[in-house]
Length: 44
Image (cartoon, rainbow, N blue to C red):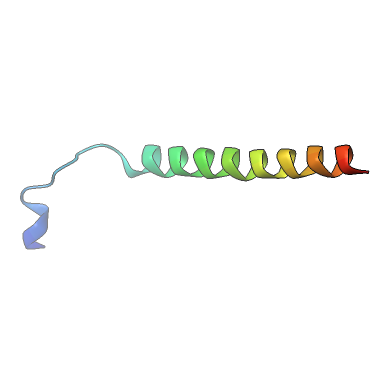
């Protein structure tokens, strides 16, 4: 057994953290896209 598995800091499921990370990055890139589209629309 791995020596680091004896005393883990977080016993939470990794799927939750992965999902939150995906959602946050998806929202961030969507916001960048929307802002760029608004700027392009206003500038034309």
